[in-house]
Length: 100
Image 1 (cartoon, rainbow, N blue to C red):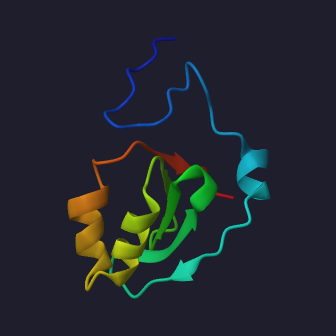
Image 2: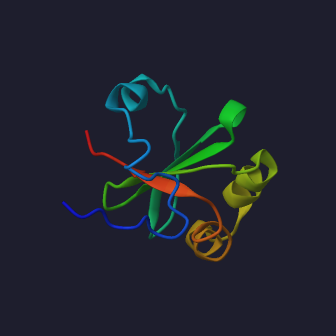
């Protein structure tokens, strides 16, 4: 079995750590529905500086080291999809969470 190198900006490297399904199940996030063509909802875990984004596709991504003030800036943006594309995507380590 040949392991693939981790993708750029990916927070996880399955050779080192994997996502624990029980941890995801235990998260009690306050999801904010979003009016966006790209994003369905967002949640923020302040103690750990983690942003969670749910896309209309159903995929959920967790972004690490995301500042609280930038989360508010994201929520206040005129277009959250454009904000995501220019200020979040490829700027923070992330991982895609497994579907339930």
